[in-house]
Structure formats: structure tokens, C-alpha cells
Length: 372
Ligand SMILES: [Zn+2]
Image 1 (tube, rainbow, N blue to C red):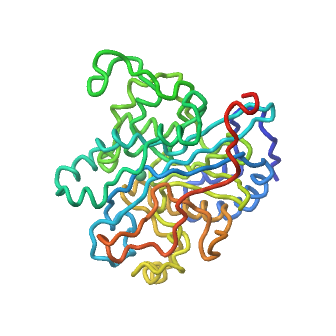
Image 2: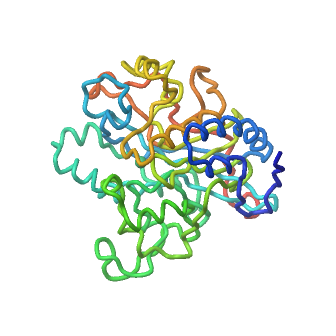
Image 3: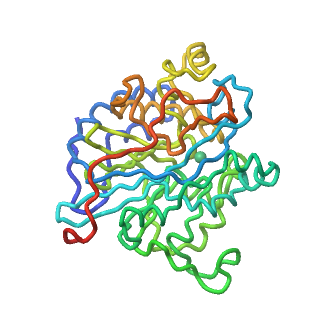
């Protein structure tokens, strides 16, 4: 039995519960190891505490191929379904009273549209389709202002993975960049923020595989301020009840935000696009329940890249094994997809049975009320 020592104040510390999973090459055995380790992780994680506040903010709705989002399970003839992509803001206090702010999925929506996949879609689709599916709902800086969080108070930013991301305006560059700042380096909009990213994800940007190319903007990562990058390897505790767990598969360097709240443990990533994809036996999306029963599968993957399919399946089981049941409906789990399936009349047969629309916890006390 391993003993888990609490981390030093204000430091990111490694979590070792799932270490054996990373070292196991055989996917069936990995699954057993995940199920064995999950209860111990849950008990330990609850004991690390809770953040003060978690809030969620809509950024954009976007079109996404139905056969990617619901893999082979949905029978809808609609080629595209609709996802709502959201920002999660987490604030906590270190034991010494110092406040910390983490932004999960602070997507620069304007620059994300340049991702090869979206750029092609936008060129090839009529304006009406764009209006129906691709609707901006807010931006990161506007959302932060709306809740009184100053840009300089953001300590950490992270994404489940780097598909579509361009973080240059958030963390700044060391040199001018031709496309958006040809005369001078970009000054960081979040001057104190560091990007927590799995080293494996950064390394994959250096030499993309054809399966990865449509989804990344790799060239935008070459001139970032080095001080703004915080590479990690595997599972880490960032604050009380705030962790990132390595969940590879969708991408090699994928990770999942895990938070402990008043309603129990939540997780968020893009491994699936609806909570019901983790409990498909309760899904009313046509085709989903029958498909998973026929194939004896317990999750429905978000399957656009299939970099490592069995590993992604196992990561979904990990997410499923560590979270609590949803308070609003016990058939579903407290898993909030970072891009969540959203019903629309333009896409019949893809409306979700249940949606979370965000993770909400605690009270946001104004900055400056206590010493930072
Ligand atoms: Zn992705």
C-alpha cells in the first residue's frame, strides 16, 4: 500500500495512484489497474480539500461531425451535431492565504477558427450553416471581467489537450509574429499565467502525424515566452481538490481536470461529448444504447483523431470511476464535457438526454477582500 504525502504549500505535486497504469502496455490489463486504483484515489482526493469557487462560462457553439462526436453509435442522418465549448474558472486559497486562479479551456475563439479543420469547414460551408452552428457566446477576457477577476491574478491556464489552441495572446511571444503582430512581440494578456501542459503533448507538436494535422496549430507554439510554459508528466495536484489526471488516447498528451466540490467529485475533458456517453445504457439518443449493448462497450468515445483508441476508452473508464453521480439525475455522472453536445433543430437525432452546462461551486469573494 502506497502512502500519499500532502504536497508542500503552493507547489504542484505528483499523484501516484495511477502510476501503474502508465507503465502497463496491455490495454486490457490497464483497465483492471484503473478500476483497482480509482477508489483509493477518490478517498485521498476528497481529503485534499476543495477550491473556494468554480464557475463555468460559455465561449462558442460549433459544428462537429456526428460520426466523430458519437463515433459509430448514433444513427442520425445529420452530418453535423452541435457542441458548446466552455471555460471553467477555478479559484482556491493556499494554506498561507494566497489566492490562486486556474483557467481550464481558455480558448482564444477568434484564433481557434484558423485550425485547419475549421478553416476548411468555413470555406466550404454556406453562411447560413455558419450562423446556425458557429455562434460566439462570449470571450475569455470578457468573462473574467464579468466576475471581477483581474487578468494579472490568473496563475495557471490549461487545456485538456492542444487541439485548435493558439495561446500567443494569453502568454505572449519572444519575437514578432507575422500573422497577428508583425512589428513587435505579443505582450501577454495574462501576464502571470503559466500554461500547464503534458510534455507528451508539446513533443507531439514538433512532428505531427497525418491523423493529427487537421486539429493543431503547431506553428503558433514556437515563439511563446519560455517562462510561461509549465510542462508536466502525468498526474498532478495543483491545489486543494484541484487536480489534472493524465488521460491519453484522444491525444497522446491529453489530461482531465478533476475538482472536489460541495456536490462531490467532477471531471472535465473532451474524451466524450455528453455525460450520457459514459453511461450509454441511459441514453435516449437514437442508436447509442443499442450500439453499446451490441458491442458490449461501456462508453462512447469522441473519435475525431483515434490516436490511441483503446487508451482513450480506458481514460473514459478512469473518468467514470473517479467522479460522483449527478445530483440532478442519478443515471448520469458528474462529468462535464469541455465541449458539450447541445440540441439543435438543425441536427435531428442528436439531442442529448441530459446536459450539465457547467460546474458551479462555492462563492466568489471579491479580489482584495483578503491579502493575495
Ligand atoms: Zn480534441
